[in-house]
Image (cartoon, rainbow over all chains, first blue to last red; front, side):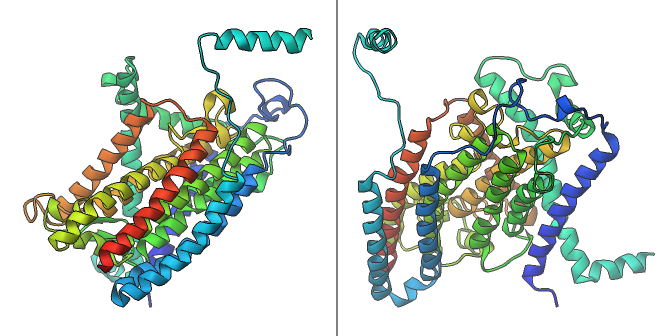
Amino acid sequence: MLTEFGGILAFFIVGAVFTAGGLIAAWLLRPHRPYPQKNSTYECGEEPVGTTRVRFNIRFYVVALIFLVFEVEVLFLFPWALVFKQYGMIAFVEMLVFLGILVVGYAYVWAKGDLEWDKPAPRFGKNAAATVYEEQNETVLG
Amino acid sequence: MTDFIATLLNDPIVTTVLLAFVPLVFILVYALVVLYGEMKMAAHIQNRLAYMENGWHGTLQPFADMLKLLQKEDIIPAAADKFFFMLAPYLVFVGTYASFAVLPFSSGFIGSDIDLGLFYLVAASSLVVVGLLMSGWASNNKWSLFGALRSAAQIVSYEIPGVLAILGVVMVTGTLNMQTMTQMQDGGIQNWLILGGNFPLGQKLALIPVMVLLFVIYLLSSMAEVNRTPFDLPEAESELVQGYNTEYSGMKFAIFYLAEYANLFLVSAVVVVMFFGGWTSPFGSFMSGPVWSAFWFVAKGMFFVFFNVWLRWTLPRLRVDQLMYVSWKVLTPFAMAAIVAVGFIMVM
């Protein structure tokens, strides 16, 4: 018995087979002459410095957390979106309450500044460039 | 022999597998066209020549590129995590290709007509993020890692407004099945959802501004999800070399590239199905039928691909704080407001 999901499985298989086929064809055709310099990590032609597993901005983590909250919420909204017309006003109001709770959390995140990213401070005015130079000179020359 | 072929074609499993190859053929042809077309358009937009050497106006260039990529040596850096390094292209391409299963290419062709349609599409295309993160981490290269992290942060940020926009459309149509969604919009341009769909006049007029808003939100977030300029921070070549696929060469790189182009058509096709009537003809029953509908679907999809390319070569790249600002502080609140508005209109 083949359901419509069998078609989906076929797409997964065809996608994987195509990728494998392409890579195998290339494997048969291409040269293979490795040496240590060629296999070293690319860092603009320089010798690689330090480790790759460096620290990165904590904001990536925060974004992932906020995403998770929203995504789960959307997951709950989809079944509702399909049927809410049949149940009329009551279903709509109930979902407004659900959304309202989420909006409170969203406003909290916004107010706490977790949606802010570091941005370069804008400098305005005619002498903006001159001011930057002077500041630089002061920090460097003391 | 003919008997054998006939029985083979009657077998549901064989036909399913054969049908699953149709979008692949389409993707390959489309990739060649877009590869050439994008470079040519870019050249004309920025007033320079593009391919001119191979064939008439360089028309043979995509084939030459393909041959070159096939023959190119495949370098796996000594520092890389080999297994995940090799697995990443599979995830990226399979995730993209599996999403094509629910695209209604014409009134007579859809890979798999499941009721979960759009929801499945969102889920399957999320596999791409896993593939990108995996490629960046396994490469063990600083450029790749940062490119992958940026890419993941960008895709998940823009997935929220994108999915909320899809939700708004689903509230209007009441179905996730993309074929049914398209059939609802049949009967001419006035029935397309961007023009309020097939509803009574009052509701229709109220829906138009909301649908236009949802369309803009989805278009912007879909552009960010396929990592293209002005949202191409993950592969900002002036800062990150090539982003997550810096260490990839030869056919593996080609797979990433192909998946990117396939993804571009995928999001364009979703825009077309959700707002511009999918495969329906703009003239009602004139120029409809399975073949014409395939033509309309591809033509509309290609228009949005063109639009994407056009923007890519016209606008400069965003800064990362602007990127996050647009997603979290502009598109998400507007998408939520649009959902509430759609709810009101549909319930009233």
